Length: 84
Image (cartoon, rainbow, N blue to C red; front, side):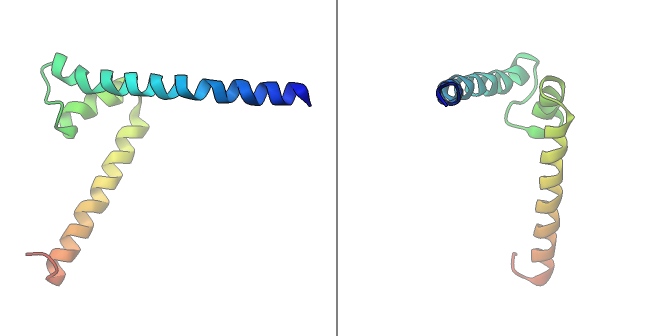
């Protein structure tokens, strides 16, 4: 029982470190396009390239899928007259 508690407390003690690592990683990913002469505020063909290289294609595909649904919903709302 004690070893189970010890493992659980060790796992929880790593959470702030992991969160800190993620924040540092995110900061790096936001600065990298700038260093490469890309626009850090533009996803497509800018940050997208850095994320694909550093993290992987899954993240890029996820964002692209969300954008497709956003565009589709926007078009449907425009056709129905909800948006100008």
